[in-house]
Length: 166
Image 1 (cartoon, one colour):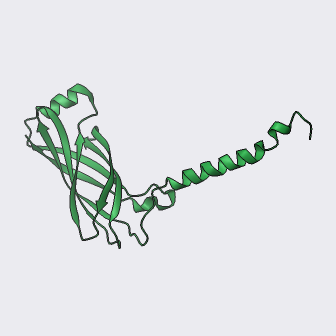
Image 2 (cartoon, rainbow, N blue to C red):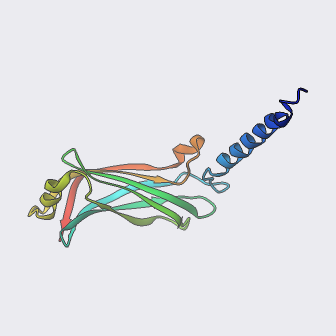
Image 3 (cartoon, rainbow, N blue to C red):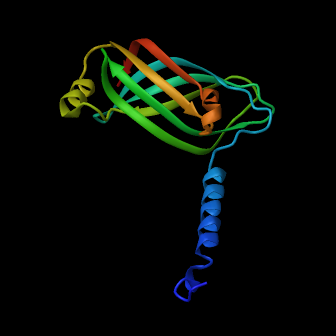
């Protein structure tokens, strides 16, 4: 081997080793499901607008049930709220460490701050004298980020009246 290339004779092996380590690290970060896990069932129960100290937010109340052998780790809750087809609130709440019991249906809630639409939307919702609003909501729960098991993450939608509380 020429003397100029001697320092690089193990470079190919080093590159292969680094790429292998990178691939193993990438694979190990996938959120895995417990053995025997079954897809949860999700249903939105209600949507409420709360005006607390001029900072309105929505509360999405939902029912969740799964029949897996063990509790399931919930990693993220994603919600979008619309009023008359206009997006007014979005959240992506990280819930790592939250375990969903397999002991029957549970009623859970997620708070979605009014954070889309600017000051006019905020003021309109904060000072609304309406008792009911027409709206909709999309909700997704993330239990796994494995592309082969994306169907395991339940989604639900709601379309109807939004209760307003002060």
